[in-house]
Length: 255
Image (tube, rainbow, N blue to C red; front, side):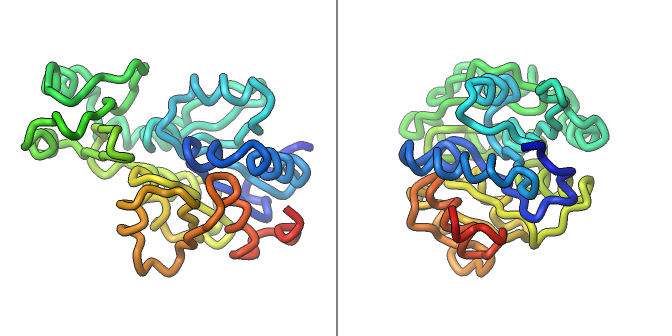
């Protein structure tokens, strides 16, 4: 079914991938993906992920995972739309502010963190961020402070990822920027995530869900946040649970 213009969608799902939209068992994922496809005329889909556009394209080309309408990738530093030919094209008007803050600093960051114990550079074609796999038991004290003192934000998530980002740029601010660009009201969006790199989007003002299996530091950071539902269902099942909990779609109870 043809996706709607997203500003006309009854409901928009803005979801992390790993551990969230891609999390849970096969049956739960199939149920959610099939429900989205059946109701595509009224459901908008935004992937909000640390993954890059190349990964997302390969994932969706496989046929099991539905294509999104928009992509907020690279931990919020890429904001893109999916074209009719299913390429993922950055939205220049929304990325200009990100690029201005980043100032093409990739080489500078890599030089600063070269050979730092506990960090292994990820094999990704970074645009406005640099990311590492993290061994927290080996990371030198003061590394985070040194990066922040150099003018960057540091985001550690799942106790195994270390992202260096432009100051003030992450999933939440980029989601809000995209929502404003698309004229999508907050109350029609469900943000879904499971790790600390999802925190900024889960508190961005929309209904939100921390899916079952979310990392404990995220759960603790969200304590007392009334707009966040803590699901029992793992991954995709938690998203399904939250759609019904917030009554975000007239057919939610039929998922």
